[in-house]
Image (tube, rainbow, N blue to C red; front, side):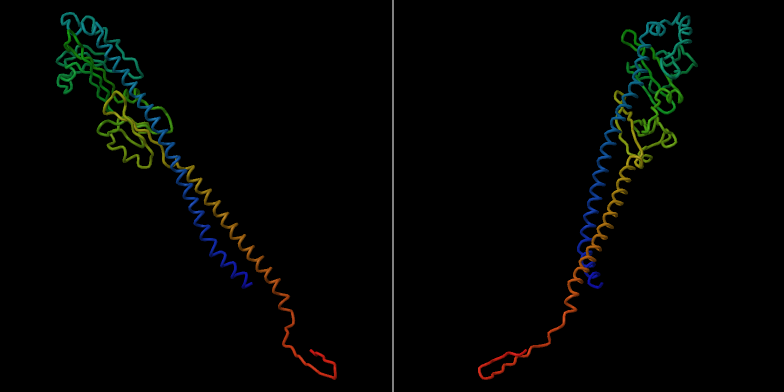
Length: 312
């Protein structure tokens, strides 16, 4: 029994540390490789989703801008700006039924070059003191997006001069309708150049007007891309880190369980082998233990005449 125990301890001391290190290295290597593979796959998926959704947002905004530009070049609009005598006869009726195609109702206003309202489709608004009016009168299309409003202002050109401005505005509900994100597993966030959240697919997780959405995305994997055609706007696509790496965590648990089973099987094999070796050695040594010992020899030589003998 002592020989078996001694042999077992010697084998365990020599085999177990190396085996354990090899198994731990294998577990760590597989975990790292699996985590990096999942990370690359998720990064690629989020980049594609963010790019596609950024293009979708750009398309929605560009559609509204083009619709406003088209409306601003309408002959009735141009004539209404310069026809100071008779425009009240037809502009009011025209604007009463004027709508911009889309999921939400827009507030449309026509102003002169001073920002005074000439016609509108819902309620009168004055833009005399608007800080952006001078920029639009230089012939530029201006858009402004916030959680509370989307504004598109297009100059009414006549003889290469801006004689008025056509303004299309959406309120908070209209902005949410126009830029609604699809119902998907990923989280989508639209931010401006100052990193304020404008639109989000989950307001409970990231409310609008949040500054630095990264502080709310610490537990998420995310990718950020610019919205094409609209400088300053960026779209972030994010997904839960826990959900993404759940298969990796399960793989690690399965590997640990398999390593434990292998380690137990190895120890059991070593114990059984040590027992067999000790038993076999005991069976070899047992007959020797029972063999009588030879205490000595005695040699006696007798000479008788011509005979000699050896007596033991």
